[in-house]
Image (cartoon, rainbow, N blue to C red; front, side):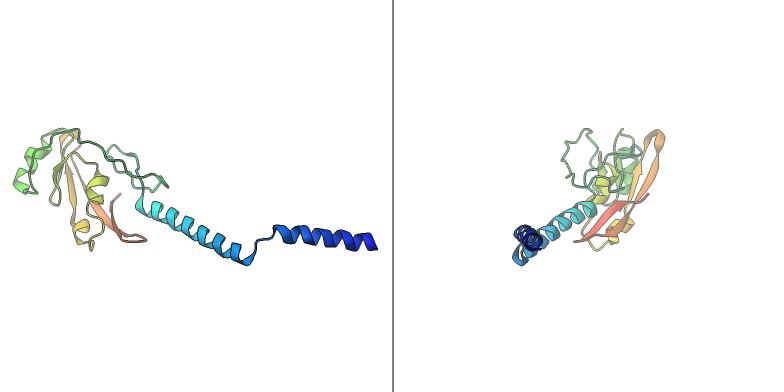
Length: 156
């Protein structure tokens, strides 16, 4: 009888020694909240996604913690300053796209939309990106209410 009481007492002491104390529990909870917020912010932002359809703007949130990488312009697109009468001149240049909000750029659809994030959403909802060439098309953006601010995303 004496050794079983002693054994269970010893087990209790070992368990108590390794238990999380209330102060440790609070700091652990705070650290977990920070980690969760960082993950939510990364998912909300969308990260640096690769193209799904060749347009350069796959918007599926697949990249959890990737940060956007600044890329140098590869095409010298004509300066149109949002002038719609110069849209055809822009679309005649390979790899250039045109929008009223951003003008003529060699950006991905994702970049066109992302540039309109954090406003009231009106400009984003009205954005239309025009592509010329053999695969001429129009792409629209939509507003997603993010964790910290509005995000302008490519409409699929």
